[in-house]
Image (cartoon, rainbow, N blue to C red; front, side, top):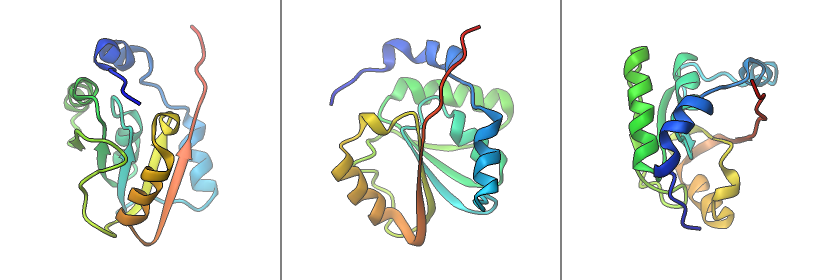
Length: 142
């Protein structure tokens, strides 16, 4: 599916740059620890989850097909003093090395992917005991 997020990148950075506190807490309750882990964040958008994982001690690579969303992610990262790597490509073909990552995460993006091709790619880049975490969250109007 061809989608252009460039037209809404600044709005995404301003209005969809939230992450429920409960999200990371619920993962911790399930025994998921990102400290010193290698993580690929597919459909990373403006980097909201990538930054949260980075702040939890993970080495994160954000994979995002929209150059404009990556640009917004880097602006936010710079303002917060974070250095996160982003790759401008699709979840279905990341170009990342085989078997290198402990976790692959997806937040609010799974519905955009070709699931069969993305799962093949995830299997390729995950380490032997690696895990896929697909998440969604709602928004509260203010």
